[in-house]
Length: 241
Image 1 (cartoon, rainbow, N blue to C red):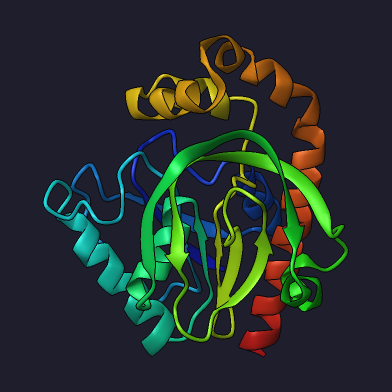
Image 2 (image 1 turned 45 degrees about the vertical axis):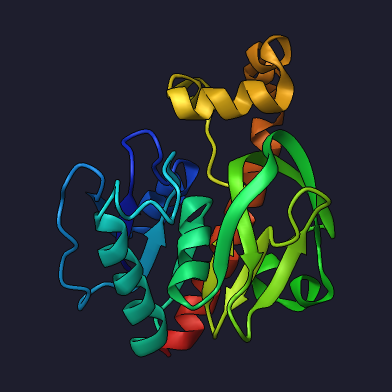
């Protein structure tokens, strides 16, 4: 496949998914929209992936490129009907592009958390062979407050009711971070906005210990991400044929 990746910060990249794509022989182009890079012609790409970032989806006055990104996502999903995966901010951008609404949370959700598949999630092939409940990493201060019409909510937890969703045939959004690597937490902690969310959610002392908590779980996180990537690849292959 040829994969187009919308990035909003150099350290908010596809993480472990890049390893899987490399193994499968996929090519990908990462475009840093926040750095002023232009969105290329969408023709010729098979999958669009939009990653996270410290900005919020409603900050078009501060980040005017957000409007063009939402338009591109809307065209990709609605008009071209091609596979999409949004992570964190990319999840929220999918919701906004298709008529949903994202809003600030009362308190940020940062750190280790369990999410639970809904009935739709348990039936969705993207989560095949995964347990009904699994642990992941969260790092967000906004959430999908109103999902787009016709959305299937696939996973939830007490902190945020739309942890994963599917819009249409194969446009998926994850609020959680399935892509993390050993470098993710230290990289994100260096960002002032991310560190503020971290310390507000956990307190300064626990925030300092998050990397140590995540480290022994990285193998399990990688297995979850690999299963999701394999399932998504199978979905895309079936759609192409």
